[in-house]
Image 1 (spheres, rainbow, N blue to C red):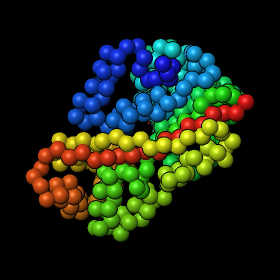
Image 2 (image 1 turned 120 degrees about the vertical axis):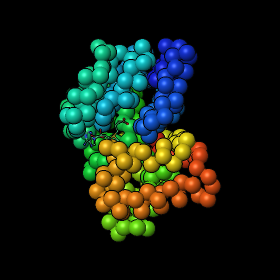
Image 3 (image 1 turned 180 degrees about the vertical axis):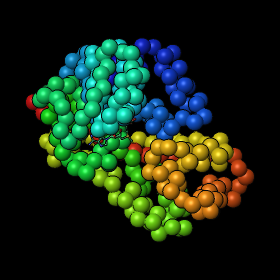
Length: 281
Ligand SMILES: C[S@@+](CC[C@H](N)C(=O)[O-])C[C@H]1O[C@@H](n2cnc3c(N)ncnc32)[C@H](O)[C@@H]1O
């Protein structure tokens, strides 16, 4: 029994949660990722207390925090994020008294030393200019014996969908070459980056692993739709294209998606690095 297992009320509840996430045709990458983040959490055995306090650093709109809250053994959850808009959204949607969200910087966490049993961070460290500072903050606010864990996308080598997007764009547009370089150079996304940072922060029992999900699409239209959405650097890039440039880009993306066959389902691997370590006594 792993107390940090995301869903522990019953197997039925787990199945309901997973099917809700997977059956939504427009499920976001993040929601899909959550189903697999559970595997990371299953590995994070509670070594401190059977009713832990948990911090979610860079919680965004609270998708990880609220999924963790499905575990009745968790005594309290705090989500902290830079963005006031995300925190407002997360707070508005929360009706669990154990959960609180607040604005704060991962590099200067608004908490005292050793306040939490565990600190987690999902898909955040790659966006922080000084991620080492954030890791040391996560260690500072976590009790000795507690776990500090994180995940980042393997954006250069393990994220087929993202590479299809930026490689196609880069064939058409020098500006996209620059953007692709930035995406591939993000901190904490190269092999060994997380493990090195965890060890440098003085964490022990450090284990880095990979976690792969499948991104499944029914048709090209399903694949293309998020690119015309509001969220993410890819949508921002598409929004800035002229109508003609967008039409050409869409056509080339369709060729990449179809890869010589008829339109229909495709499944792409997306891998993230995951790491966990223990705060020493
Ligand atoms: C890709 S989102 C991930 C959100 C959430 N962890 C999830 O997986 O659903 C990245 C988040 O990191 C937050 N973020 C970036 N830099 C931050 C910082 N220095 N301190 C706190 N949050 C930060 C952003 O505001 C954004 O909500």
